[in-house]
Image (spheres, rainbow, N blue to C red):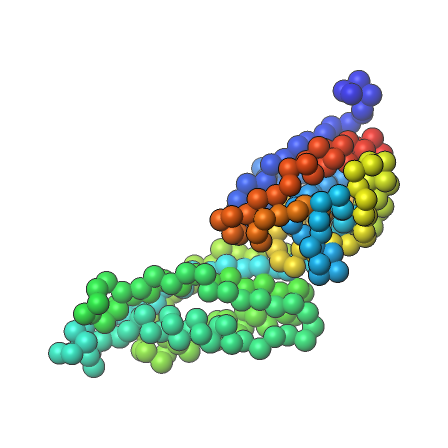
Length: 268
């Protein structure tokens, strides 16, 4: 259809989608500087907090959570746990204390808030007080107030755990992926495009991401230049939740999704 379509069309595969460098690298290289309309797609989302199944589609998503990931390095002092335990400074216990308290932060009444300690690596051997520990943490918030609340509570707990065990520590901060919202104008285009495809039996307005996706960085870049963005939820039957080794999905959703993009392009 090259001779029937005007303008420039760019297709992106977004790498490193949850590690802060994928979308940012695309934006930093200027690939979105001249983009007027941005369409993002993701499977395995929900609608009204119920899984969005095959043959269904959500025209847009607005409930992105901001997300920040940090590495916390606790620096203690090794010692024999029997002969000189009072001289040791246990970094492992500090990390465990911090982890338990991070997961005890009170929820925020303005919206979704999540915190997770995904990894702890500590110590050298069973008969030595652990002199070091690495703790990998992420926290998410639905709006700016929640993000500020999360940052304050997380940093207080990390610092307090270090003081309890008389440790030094430092934090590697990977930055924050922002929230984003789909433009209604683009959602309407998605709805009209989906109506032309017999595969889709259920078309709803809003899907639930209930998490984060740094596609929000690309969406906001286009919107900051005066363009329009949308993040579509593609319904798909799955075998297990995402981030599970047994995850698989219904591949029959792929061809209709390509046709959907083509219809949107024709409309634009």
